[in-house]
Image (cartoon, rainbow, N blue to C red; front, top):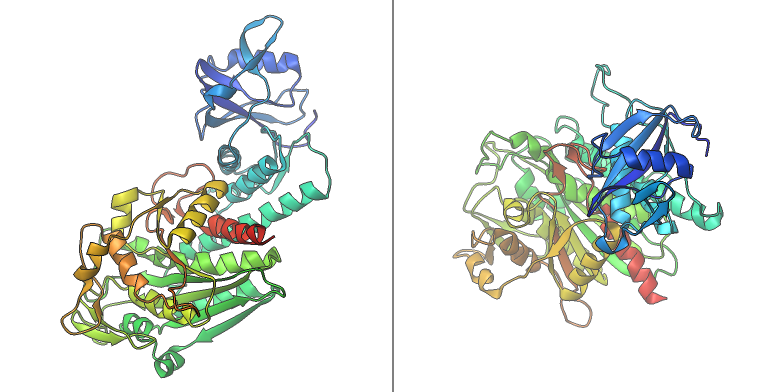
Length: 510
């Protein structure tokens, strides 16, 4: 195989007896020699390892890159014996999870920044494998540099990626590549919104960004400014936003295809910066609160992705956008807000603001009687305590949470269902209003979801609309080192899950 690229990437896995060279386009002789050298070279096959070697003349690339895929399934490490290679180090066909391929491709492309052309020759036995490699490549090639005055020695991301596969180059293959590019673009657009500094992304500019991103797509964008919010009684969004000179917004993004097979509403928390308000946060780490609008960025780009895919699902995103600031005009602890729909809330802590804006969005979404409502929010620090930095919590109606978990598993994202214990509801009782905005501290992620559930409306049959709440406080923002296809800061998590969920609805209706 000749690769007109700067680098050819092949995979190495961690087998029970050491590193295993994965199926690749090298000649048997070259593969055997390379397999025999893995341990000597310090190559283990661990995830995120990308070891560069001089390119072989037979492949044509300047650099040969050995990308780690992590531990191999123990039952699938069977290898071929080649003459002179009794150690069985050159493998037979390997079956890897799609997420392992996605991460390996993303990690390699991310670490090869500075090169122009890269060929990925990871094992791709199916169209789904190719899709995973392509998605990983798009996500790995992301960068956010628009506010830098110069490159300052930074390397540009890889510009062109080719995927080596034995699958036929037909319409089916092109379709999965097109989908992967679209999904990757949606995730990267979400990352860029999350990464924007609060000096540049605030309620009005976020609404403008939604309109800009929607151009050329069959969607309708409606924006409520502060005057319309006041007139129509969106007390939660207004209450949170009134401490800032930059007034709040509600943005509705509708994708309404003909002959839709399902109707879903997505509600996103869009706090463009969260100081905590009068209940102010500690200064340490407050800068990360630019990411408190990640939920709104997720639901926006999910709907735009569904429109780009022409999926027959009516999908509406509700972006509940405000900036939570302390000032003489800010709401106070003990204030009572009248939410959209008339329910009253006693604000005991102004740093529990996300649920206030989300409550307005949930009521508005309910009035359109969707088949299901899913809200996405960086809602609680308790989510990180319960599930860590990389796993989102999902709570709500079993039928929806189960479907989201299944979609997340296929999309390669980490989601875990959590209960909504009934004993948490009394802790939200208020002496002066219908409900208080904080309750039981222990299990705070679930208490917040119990609060949100109070604002999910009833379907036409009188039963509560099926609903799920996804808390992405941890996985939406990476404060650690880059890993897999994830860079530092915004990750764009949950977009892939929600697109997969909508695709599953279509498949179930067939």
